[in-house]
Image (cartoon, rainbow, N blue to C red; front, side):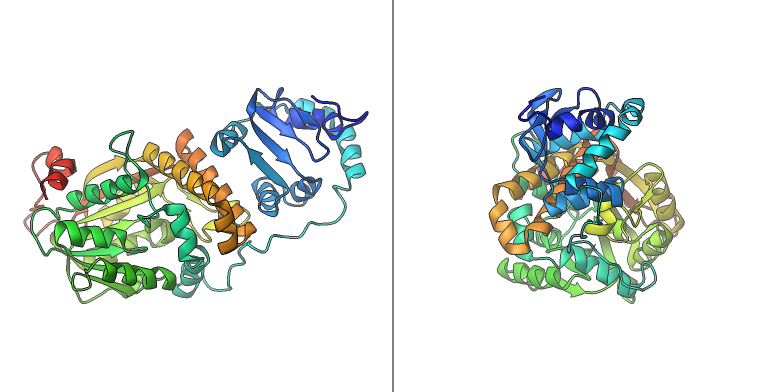
Length: 435
């Protein structure tokens, strides 16, 4: 611990910090007066820029208070952001030390002015409308909060592929754009799009059209992509036109609940069911089954958590990132698909691939930080830095997962149309190289 003054902030809060984070803390802790507490490693640091950090934590204990402090700029992280957050996510807690140092800590916080008035809530925090959960109007508002930010911002974070879902890194040297293309090829192959030309694909939650464009350009599929984000739909249509695929790809501004009266040969649902919610997930799959021909396939690509997790209204993810979002247990997803009339034929985890994807998104954001701030403002940029960093930690430590679940709509005699061995389903490399 450095001693820049007779009674530095680090000295006054030493017991509090060690009680909260362990003795020693997992990383270096630096304070606004220049003093610090050494951690197990000096490569990464948690930087407390202002005593307002403690006001946030006292008025909103837990992750929401930390998030508000981070979004407000009262906390920073130096070094490898993901590694620093990973170290802080599993502290060596010392509850007895924390209690023992409570009087001195409270005295110090009072002297810093850290426990007086409630701190302002960052403007980037979401305030949900007064509509029923997962109604069309509330879902549209939640999707708009997250996706109708700025297409330019998304491009600088996601890169040229404009694909906002887990990539698939076939080899260690693969860059992000190639890995996203590999993921789309993997899905196309699982859906059987390589079997024949002009198969009709429905891409639910189509984003900026990357999956639709690849299915049409590489597999000669006729694609309908639907989204309820106006910003996404507008740019997706532009990208389709630029790719010369206007006759093969239709992008609609449409809610999945309005699907009816048409048939598709295959359906991709990539990063969509997290927005549907557990209560509606079976209805979601029944709706998709209703527009899928017999022996058609559905690929559901979604984040999951054991036991499921509905975001608390006081969580960082709910307030700033995915309002009304919900991670569904893999087993429940499979059961819901089966209840909706699908035979589940394949399940695959891409957890480590998502951790790698998120690290690359974080690196993109940090490399173009000034551009990001110019585009969406510093608060929104900091929300994204914290959100993607925390998500990378979650996929790294196994707290959350990413599963692709493939279902087939059996015909009346039980015929599935599936290949006899899994290798024919999963191997994309031969197909891609031969076209």
